Image 1 (cartoon, rainbow, N blue to C red):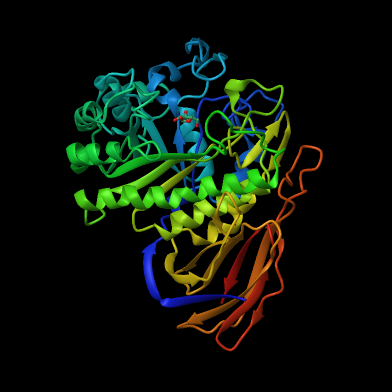
Image 2 (image 1 turned 180 degrees about the vertical axis):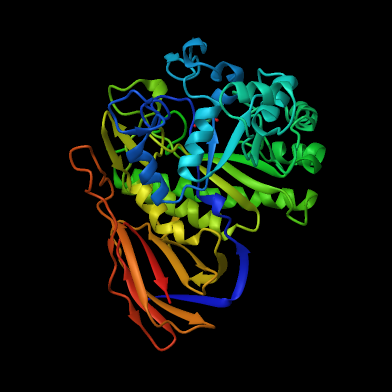
Length: 489
Ligand code: AHR
């Protein structure tokens, strides 16, 4: 029996709802086909956005959406994507798949998508190949309410009022695809570019500085030292590549060894966040600057017979556990982590939705986001859980968990069992409140269980009923290879 103790009185940080954010790039079928099909499509759409996809995303409460990249952001020139569609530039997406980019999805379409999703837009600007003026004008175009060339241009293109824009990223992966810069050079550029990312009227922008790749602690140290005072957020990118970049392996055909290797790799997110946070603490002890994990997720080989530049992969119970691990880690570090964006929302990498023509499937990762959505904006409370190390050569902690209490005093417990052969009975003591009613849901299956267009409901949430209310808490058994969410009232 594993002992768990929840202290409902020990309230920690707020779990920013933006931790449940997403990322969508001009990459493969992520936007075109997956979300945006155009008004003339025979796929049901609202102003060009797929109705089925938007409705499914609203259900999991997507809170913020990052766009247009990724590496694409530092090659994107926003003026190519405004004005009449017939006159928009057609070009090759040299970064992703060498296909034609017709710019039919641009700023207006992105803002319309965010309106439909009821989420905050997060626009990523171009430092790598764009000018200061271009960035300044984009912000002016989106947010200026008054007389100005950009505001006039916006009105001419059908939008009189400015949009509300909170999140703006000043470059993406400028240590790599965004210009191969040294941190000292980028820090100076960041200081310069962000000066012109202006707050117009009541629109206050949260400026996000390009942060490190994975374990590049020198990058964090340098940019925080040289430019930390000018930013509100620092990005972090960490992907789960089982076996490393060159040996990612199949998304579906993998063995038990690779299951644990993948989860071991995903679990390293905790150490990475802790080490970057410790550096940030030295320059920003008040935790004014948020850590924005704006790219995370599992990255495997593409599905056979698909364009290698499209990064299209299937999604199994292994991804459900990768998602649970990461979301629990973000929740537990919500004193520093203010946002996270899974890569990527539809049809790319660890997607929550896959589409094929008119068909759509929800992935196991989608269902984990559905289970975890109750944490959004709730308060993290202290929880401790007796765990053990399993996985042999690829050690992992057997269980992952986080607990929050919302404004109505309702408690939500999420937990994942990483073991492929052990169910764990949990004896949970709840201090400071008495459980009266418990409801639960579970997502479970074999390690490679997944949904296909022919069998879209192989993995889906089911009620989780066997929770017993005890004198001082609750008792239940979490089955192997599963993710659960409990609501305790
Ligand atoms: O998400 C795919 C790519 O991964 C992004 O474009 C880039 O930022 C990262 O390297």
